[in-house]
Length: 395
Image (cartoon, rainbow, N blue to C red):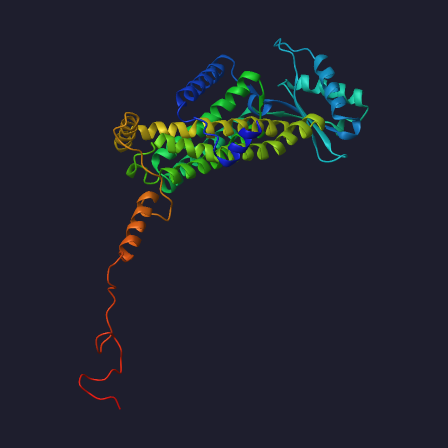
């Protein structure tokens, strides 16, 4: 395991993620199919902001939040419901500090039922009726929130696609947006299957995870673009292999980014909601925890495989892949010798460089018995200056 961790940090794990993209696509298709079936078969558990309901505000001086919630449940059980469905508490949360109020939301009731519940709470808590307020929440407000959220989602996707087309290309833009939609559908599917309640905080969380998912995908695509720049000029590596190398090189960064993001969100969910009982933190933390976990998966196993599949339909990359595979087959048969690796500062292989250098040095060295080729100095033969002229006398 330590060896694998070291290779992951160095980007040398050589995991064949892109090469097994059919497996990841099958897993994604099955997950999306299950999510869509759950949308129609089970639906969603909507909060009272979407389905409508009643809201009671009780002062925090009556006791703990759990005590207030149990008292409201007893009051709801004592009120008859002609529709047959039992009245229930939808959510509870504390607003303000220790001297704040408890906000308790219940199923939708008629005005007579709401007044009966209020009277029961007044007697149970022993406080004046003026300190307990009850109001009816319409589902129209939740519908307006959903409409604005969908509008924001469409604008966000349009801006993201435009940016990615300018920054990278349209195929990377399509792959990134496909990854974002995969995150949304799968996160919504988990909410539908498990029965988590959909609240306005959930909608906000859905929009928040899009930014995190996009950031991780852009990091991977930037490395893919770096590894595949000018790849068709060589015949040693296919586009899929270069993209797979980019995923391996950014794999540990994606995992670390996901863990760093999930740890505070997990604290928000399990400590803030689980231990402190803050209902709003539970709704927000839950969707962030689920969505960010899926975003880490999709950036590794979905976005880059989709990009590679789109690239495989491009004629120049098809021809390049065929050329690389044909050359490897020729090398395996011994028809072509593999290329010698070159260092960045060498324009020739090391053996050719050494042979050329040896030949140059051999040509520069004088042969045995050969006369020097240096130019003789001007003057008499023998090169001695100041010798007397022929027939002259020495003074």
